[in-house]
Length: 99
Image (tube, rainbow, N blue to C red; front, side):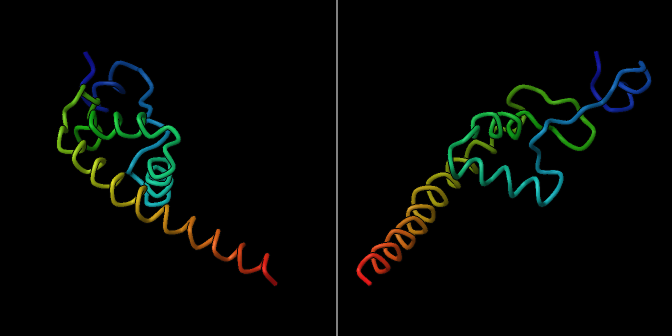
């Protein structure tokens, strides 16, 4: 069984991270954008919930508190902020249409 990155490298395996992680600010922003637009958000959430720490093998539902974060982010970020942004764009299009 491989639990850490060292275990993996010792057995001559290749250590690979998930494509969407929170290890880098830019990739984390992309992950949150995916969640806000509901495109592939389940995979992002599952990866975050399974994460245990740096250089540790993911374990199913190891970080259950991440569910609360995603619920709050979806409610606040997606439903309010995204709808407000879309409303501003539609309002600007309507103003341009009247001119």
